Image (cartoon, one colour):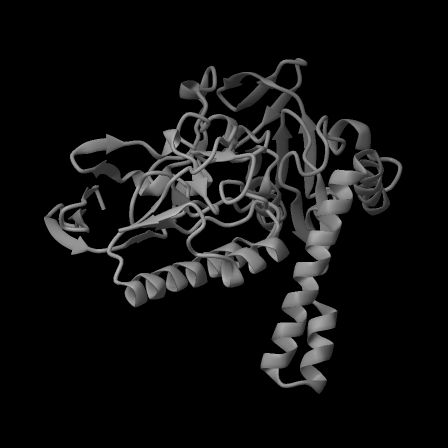
Length: 376
């Protein structure tokens, strides 16, 4: 979708859509629900590295992985320390000669079993649907509990998280340098490694971690600021993603261009002063689909309410003074780089994004529909 134009007179959106063959089509809709995520799928974050043009091997961005890439018995350097990097490294290490994860600074990394023993035990004694529901609530409640505890007891959480890594790798590993972040837990996402596969690859010598900065690429590797040279046949730049709100759709309301970045988010899914528009936007501290499910349920409630009352337009309106805050309080690079395109949130309901599933269940499934919402 390229553009969406709202007409209050018609109570409808006119949508301009470009098909795969570049042919454009026009659609009309009374309500627009955008489920495009918040990543830019056409372009990832790709820093310019000095000397990259003279590197004799291949440089690959994970977002555009080439099907013909053969890393068997190759020396691979993965630049980055986030979820993409910690997922790639143990997988590449299975057949590569060696894989080095090159990071500027460490990330909190947690190992968890690849299979849920609790869920598997329930499936043996309960019907699938009942086992699924119990497992789901177990995961939700435990996740919320540990998140709150880590934010409340930050130093203790930091010690525990780093201690788990030390238990996995042993005292011989340089945990302070490579696995002790400078920030508090949940200032950025925690990275999960199933069955500790990253740690196992490091222990067997198939992979290693280097914490340093890049001075320049060379013909056959990367020279670091410390003077160390990392030989490489392939460099994977797991350097992050770019954010893109609403899939890059250009919005106008009654002929006036509107920018979500200047709006307040309403219940984490709608925008102030923009009618009949909702987005699916998940949690940063839990499963994305938890919030997406709640958002979809709320949109259905809203549409039913509009149908029952004969309303054609539903527009969030700020009804009392509210202070503005950043939409996401993460210090992650991809969030900080996108500050100018992200909307803002308020300091009170219904304009605040709480990142709290239990509170959102009450608000979105059972709470009021008409709080600071204008119906026409």
